[in-house]
Image (cartoon, rainbow, N blue to C red; front, side, top):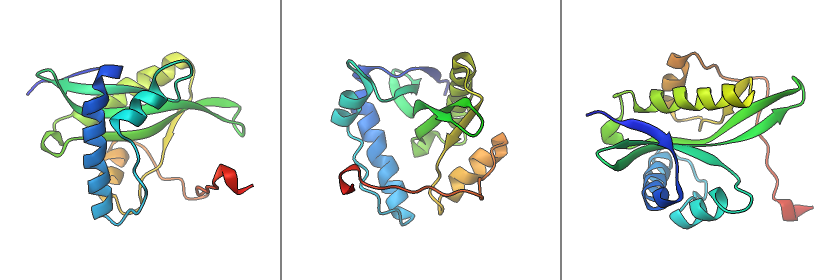
Amino acid sequence: MPFTIRAARADDAFAIGALARQFADYLRGLGDTSEFRLTAEAYLRDGFGQNPTFAGLVAEADGRVIGYLLYHFGYDSDRAARTLDIADLYVEQTRRNQGVGGALMTHVADVARKAGAEEMVWAVYHANDLATRFYERMGAHRLTDIFLMKLKSHAL
């Protein structure tokens, strides 16, 4: 079944919230204990308005959102270069292995190039072998010389 890729809009909130719940369930099944708070309301609050935190793309088939990719821009001070940071990429299970994820990645790479970003970066849950293999087939590689850290802002 054919699909199209387009910019995510505010009226995609319900569909993206539903897909985000599917994504959370999938990751929980792999052992991820994150809070997974992306809902339709959070999508609208953080992605739209005066100071959006992220932008996104959706894959759509027959007027229905079947996948999404959320991103924001960052900066790598070591390289003195802009980056495009992928926050989420998810394709509903029934539409996997049909080119949807690859198309979302290809489109976001175009966004990155047009914005002057030299690299795209993202995190993958360590047990998500399906995603790891998908990204490696595209030519991505694991960064093993660094690791992520986090600290609640109110802790200091």
